[in-house]
Image (cartoon, rainbow, N blue to C red):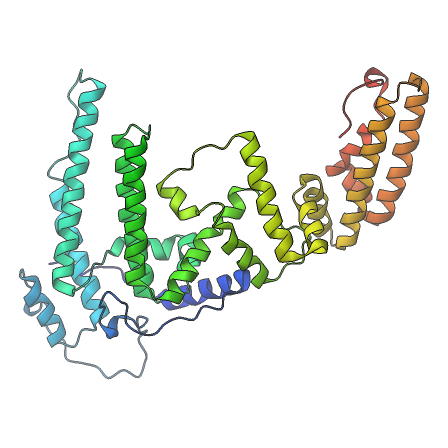
Length: 414
């Protein structure tokens, strides 16, 4: 048997950092539950792994040959007999089982015969995947029979290496977070198998299978997490709704509580976890307009008319561009608003000049030059010493207000 060579020594610090980041970003009020998980994990495994101290009393060294055993149950008993903590027993045993099943998986390497057709290669690939899946299920069953619960050191590696995972699950006790990682991996693999079997062309039966898988995943989560933990996880998973729909809050005064409530309400429009299992059907243009109008109504009811106006402005890339510039140059938000409004007003006036057929080409050109000059004065006043940098960067739209001779008399104004 092999003793694993790497243990997560700095885990406690990583967990604390992730939890603080989430608390600041989302204003989470969730508290870590110190009780044992619903799946029956021993209470000794719910604590963070201890760090060694200089004051620990030395213990007699027992030769490893007297501890290791080909019988896993005896191996565990020997480890407990020398006072090995439960979390370390778990890591040693699971690492050894990982090695055992890794060797088993190598007995059937990938091999394609020459001149095979696509269907034959696909069948060979599916057979190998089915074998590997069977080995993994055997491994999980063996671990559960020995420890009383499923555990994968893979989940621990993901937890320590993937920032998004640690931020999403940072509020959970360590052992529960690793269980969730493992459950997600299993569910994702099962969903991918369904999609591949359907050649990624889903019919109603395939969607029904994926929906059943999603419901099973949610039910399993509810068994592993208590009510408050599950609610917090679902809320954090739903944050992806904002990014997926390009929803922005530049210059919007919104509290953590308001943001969390908005994310909670967004689930009725699109459940992000469910859509990972069962892809949403494409919406028509009319459906998208109705969907966005309904969502905006929810935002307005939550934030109120004044904040909602700020929210609508934040959805415009032109404002986000000047807002970012103002932040990079240590300018107040009022400067960004002034420049944005000047740009909006100038675009409207320029459009009116272009559409006014009572104006001659020279009159239109003169009106646009005057508009450009007055707008530049307004923008310069708002930006102060940063005005020239703005002109060289995102302020190129100012030049487009008065086009050159080759473009006068038509064209769109940005």
